[in-house]
Length: 256
Length: 65
Image (cartoon, rainbow over all chains, first blue to last red; front, side, top):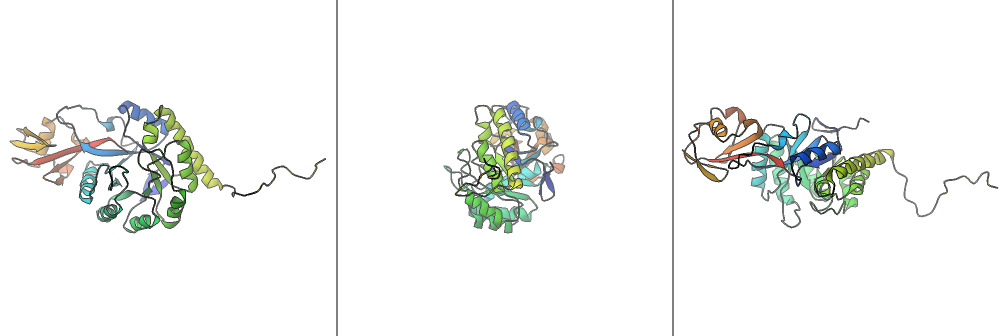
């Protein structure tokens, strides 16, 4: 079933995007991504360890020709840092994609929306394909779209919390408010959470801890793959309305 | 000359950025580099001159969400 998501001319085949953090090692990362069926992975930008001189690199296990690499600005609490990391990420030479994070608080890791908006404006003008990690405020989502974001990535719940889609109503409003793709990022804890996000009409879901922190990450990656597919199909199929009372499924006609 | 690379002071005989990367056994294709807060284009690594006390950041992609 052809169901490619297009963002600024870039084709994203999978509706499940996978984070590469928190895995035991590169080999586990590779196995999980394979089980997930995803072609989109996020990465962080960090100093090379020049003292230890370990020659292994994440991209030795995840081929940038096969996977879309989406660098993030995780750990950035200021606009200045987010811009700095974004520009370095782009110079690593893979693409203009950036998952923009400007964090406002250490405990919740909620975005600093004011800083996020400023950074989005600057980076969009510099030609980046900006995918901002935002909250579930539809007003904010519209501001980000107007500022040049190529998609919006509202959180379902705090990063790593596994609380699922805490405000499905706001997510639905965001879907009706912006024209750019909506990709839920953060908070998905298990398969049903991912399915719910897709049933609401989201274009994709990004999951890291929900898979990496599972007791069996490879099995969970497969679960998420199926959940995203199920949710997406259900959304396209058009569900029945919710009713207070019953409507029989078997005919009255022909009863004895 | 003395350089500060990724927060560490070190001595190098390299004259260019590419020379430094080679000395540190870092693959140029896998990294991005900043010298004194300016990102250096990859195409310039081979000719980019280093100066005493330059602050250099060499980053790459690691696992992250």
